Amino acid sequence: MEQTKTPKRFTLWHAAGLLLILCTALAIWFGVHPRYRFLSVGILLLGALGAWKRDWLFWIVLLAEAGFVIFLWTFPQAGYRIASLIPLAIIALLFVFRFFKKPVKIIVSVLFGLGTAALLLVEIPIVRSAAQKPEPDADYIVVLGAAVYGESPSITLQHRLEGAARYLEANPRTKAVVSGGQGEGEDISEAECMRRYLVEHGIDPNRILLEDRSTSTRENLAFSNAVIEADGGKVDRVVIVSSAYHLYRAARIAETLGIRASGAAGSDGYPIYMLGMYLREAAAVLKLWLFGA
Image 1 (cartoon, helix red, strand yellow):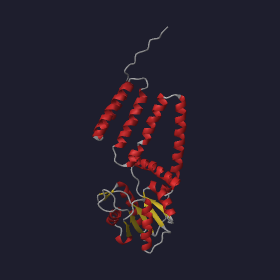
Image 2 (image 1 turned 30 degrees about the vertical axis):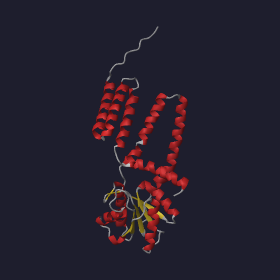
Image 3 (image 1 turned 90 degrees about the horizontal axis):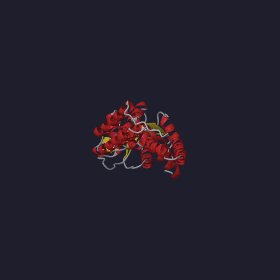
Image 4 (image 1 turned 135 degrees about the vertical axis):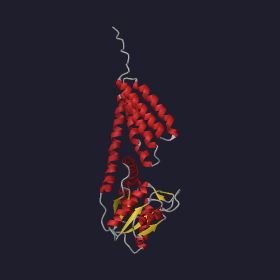
């Protein structure tokens, strides 16, 4: 005897799901750049249709992940956009395990597992270097540059300068080499911006040396080496001040230049931003391992 299907009923769970979808879409609509707003409407419709299906939870999770991706892309900083790779990967896995057959699921699972293992392998030395304490009472610290907006330090550069100021205050004998040239959109060199910041925060200007020609980490260190030697110093006791995620690669590049250096991390950024930067740094470290500095 043929059984008739029980018609779906609108339940409290459906109402809660639709409310979540609506709140997410409204948050996106009023909280992001206008070019993302119509995408939020599409997500709303997708979630509303999915909520009527038996697997409504799948669509609500998918909606939440998509909303998170859009939210991260509203930030101009690269770290947030790179961090969006994580919810994007979750969306891809949801689709694979929901709509594809078992052989495809197995292949994707193996590839995802291998990729995750490789990422962890690369991240281990990065995280280890970030957690290490710098050598005290170094002769010089080299503060690596980052973006300057007009004449003001970016958040990344400010965090590095906060770390440099802490080290210089704790080690009054140490001199600082502030390293970074002038790039597009910068009214002054990164080195000059750093010098001004440190002086404003109580560091004696006589302790600050400028290297204002470099455009990369390798040039930062090579040109700072020349500045230290011109000052009559040696590069056998140098502390590199940079973002925590950058210290491992900076130290490896320093080794190729004959510089023995430990690292001092600047202040931490926001967690999601830092997560994205650790992911990006993994790609840079892998390139360093494969192709050299």
